[in-house]
Length: 505
Image (tube, rainbow, N blue to C red; front, side, top):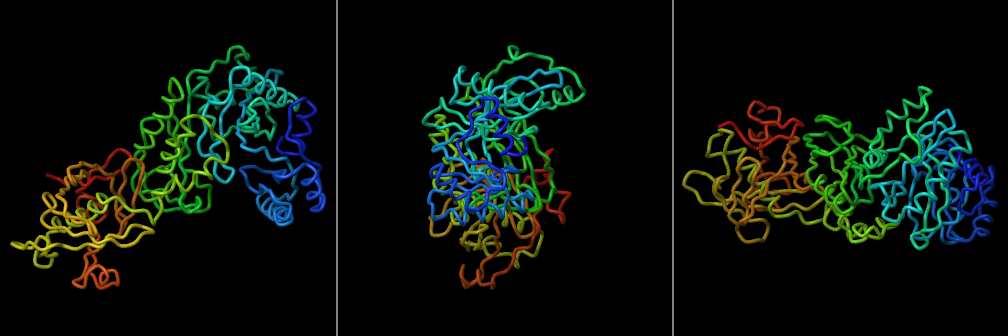
């Protein structure tokens, strides 16, 4: 089952529907081109070994076949040490639905329902749910029975997943894609709707014991959804990111995570950081709970896809269950429109960054005549800060008064009354609470699933342009309220490491 060609032939012999295509081992480039034209474009080129979308190529034009075949072979060889390629007809508007199966060494095999995995980027899953909003009980039973037949055809033992491609336009048709001979990332949603611990069940079967239940004993209760938290930038084509975890506060739902404050995230491993999983009485409740959980997820120091996930969950097609594997790519511009480095940073974020710097200077105990004019005794001038969001353009923010009662002007906007107390900002009649952490000269702020990395310094007399050219006075990287290492005794810390601006009274 780890070889897609052998797997397709095996399950086809057992009566399981397979996608039309050519899967003979050792097909040459010319034979692959002929097979693709014979099957009919569009086609999907797939490595026989491996998974995770690596080496897969969708080809719609015959002129693109030579380059696509060469590219697929090259990636398959590099990823799996095997450049064998098969060709399959591409199912338009496809949905990715998989069946969890379990089998023991005594001839017993069952399925535990399906998972909908159609929300993907680069052929890799982002959000998974159980059960699928597409299937009814009859379709579930047909697909489940075929999955069990596939497992029994090879004498399978343990946990496995039979993956199907289903046309969104013709949900009664399903085709076998492959079988993953292991426990998958998304297994928690099956655990939440069945009440079964699949890891415990694996150990039970591996110990030689029979399955402790039969197919008729399996019940699905409610709806479960999982979102994968990745260290990546959706606005830049999902490029992996990295950094050091400065603050972490995970929501009070099931979170499968290996993160801790201080964890270094690099490029040597898969960028998945954690999985956030929720359960609800129905799909609408589960979607709402997942959105709230992601809004409460705080990770500072490493750019992630959390804000993108929230935008995806609010997409009308996701809310209605009208899914297919191309939805994310089609809606990508809308989903990332306010998330990229060039996106406008909310003025309250820029105001908070400037006031945090003012707070650092007010608490630093330096000679007040060396501090910016904004709070020099008896003065009413504006202190001018240059705030530079990561990947964005510098913005001038002016502050007049003290942090506890100030006027703030962001860019060319009108002056606004503002104040900062602990982690709470009062700005233009609104009250906003941030998570905050500092890494040298960079301030990280986060709220509602979004994060901003901000650099700041005092502007020189020449204005924003002069300061941006390097003539400004750099703010000292110390702030008792945020308590980076030089001022650690003044900080307060949550159980998961999120630091606050609150100082000792």
